[in-house]
Length: 349
Image (cartoon, rainbow, N blue to C red):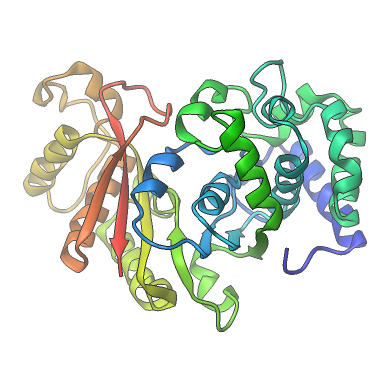
């Protein structure tokens, strides 16, 4: 990590997370937010499709799985960014876990593959002494507050901590077998992880000066920037302008930007949205009147929503600005329709 929090900050940040529990997490994403223990997108497929170096990688923080995948592809320096300050404590914990735990213990601790809950305190104790002091103070405070009960800790601090355990093996490659896991373990031990506490649109001023990147992974950030009842092409244009003016100048020639991850994307739904927007170019509204326009009733569940319209606007604008590569990926498990798939959008510089 470039700059670890000091001891007083660690205690304050732990109390900030505890306050979030008391207040019921009134904000989806903010300075203190719930954490992801694993990626909920097919990281393995799209990192393999990114035909570029990974030596210096910029990626979302979140579960750290994007950074681990980049490390497995050769990253020596991984720069994680996240608006959630608590994420630095989770990234440091996960780095210590994968660097020191045998594979079975790691799977139990981070994925709960063979037991009921992630973050089991007995497994935490195996890496407790390996943690930098501020990181240890944070997690010791958290465990003490929850009376060392991993069930309540994981349910309160993590998003869907058990739901995606089986999915994890599909979308992450680094713990599929002993050989890959222990190879990844050695690579993670030697890699340098850096943390940037930043909102996405603040990266222009928070990214370290003089650092350029071989690869960039933006996950599904776009979805959170253009979602809900105020979806608009204007927001898609703002996102693309930021890519062009701020991020792409920091991408090395020959580098790849994973610009967006589209969960439960469907071509038929997208074509339907295009027809509807031509009929009413002023905008859209969630409705069920399109049921007769789709051949497969399952597609109703992914259909006329802000998310799908947001994706439509993004793809239309991206195709006007860049030669993009669309990479179909395994379904992330989110959403209600098995008729859809996920899609990663790559831009090569």
